[in-house]
Image 1: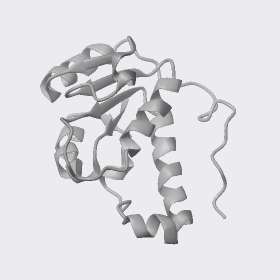
Image 2 (image 1 turned 120 degrees about the vertical axis):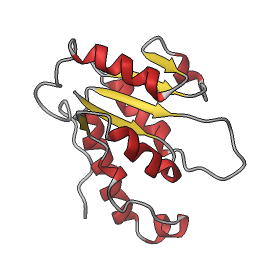
Image 3 (image 1 turned 135 degrees about the vertical axis):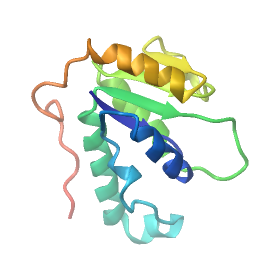
Length: 149
């Protein structure tokens, strides 16, 4: 079962440890170099598109999605993890979970299971693995990401 792990980028090392608990982790952002500044988002939008498309593909090929949330903090956030949840929500067959507090109304949807700890979520994922089928057919369900220029 392919599992996509999402969280603020600064928690990447922590999630690498969780990924080691999985048979298959589809989160290539955990091992890549997709971090860049706000200025780079403006100056190098094509580079950002490449990272976005890579993450989108990773989410689309997953059969489960886990978002690690946290209490609101003062530091600025870009919110990519929330967009990633939206992509996963569109995939009706994907198992969805959050580990941590609910941060917005989409976390209250009945498709989203909340856990207080990674240990509890991992147990749920292992139980669900026997019942989950891999996504079939077209990775994009007829949709295509914008081409890189």
